[in-house]
Length: 314
Image (tube, rainbow, N blue to C red; front, side, top):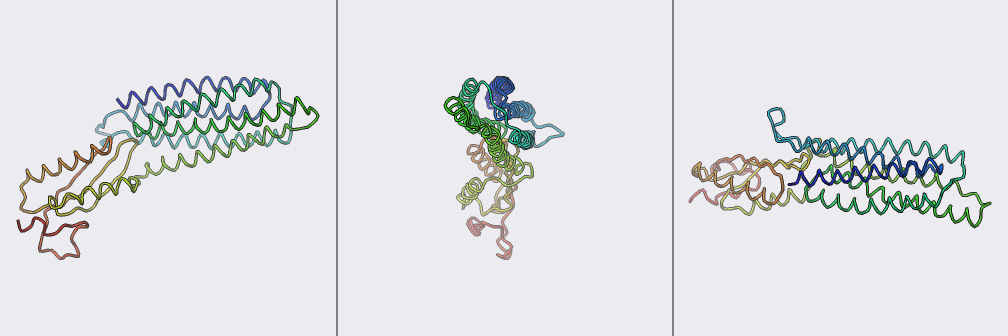
């Protein structure tokens, strides 16, 4: 179900970006506006990012196999990292072209059509980015969320370019002798830095998951609280380890139980714990190691969160 939602969302993103790239590039070249051309490049990067995300989602949806026993979820994280690098490259190119245009300003043609294209772009990307964010949160997909923020950034940058074009249109029609053409490359440079800011935010999350950083503190706290609430069924737990790959979570923990407990009883405990955690977090793999509690061991080497004595004498 989630894979179908992801594929449909990315398909819509690819189609919309393709249309916007064509419109912006055409108007930018005909009108000679570097800010619109920079927006076309931005949308082009969005299109490439959407295609990369599409490939990543197809790859990550494959089940675990002999070579990838933990699944293919990190293809989504890799996709997010590549998207961020592409954004940095596009921003650098925009700054270079803008500085050249700032040193060699020329009048911009067809401002009215350019403004309409920017309005259209902002509206389309606003609704599509909202849709992608909703699907990304529903499916817990960093690739979808990254693509959504690409488009959301495009909303802000398109709006900024539109404002600068409106100012130039007003001045061109009412004060034609006043030189305001420097505003176009300056706006493009501002757009570039907004793009870089978004790229830094996206790359951070993607890279953290690639290097197996623990789950967010709020999620780890929930797991700790839940396990502590199981006393006196369990005596304690330790070695809690968590990580994430794409939308899949991996949770490992050692659970301490009464040493006199039967294998069947301990198995029932691990089954209940795994079921509860998986019902709280989507796409979660839980590994539990059962350990017997030794009431005679020194307290300083007891496992953390120990409920010592809860079942030992029963």
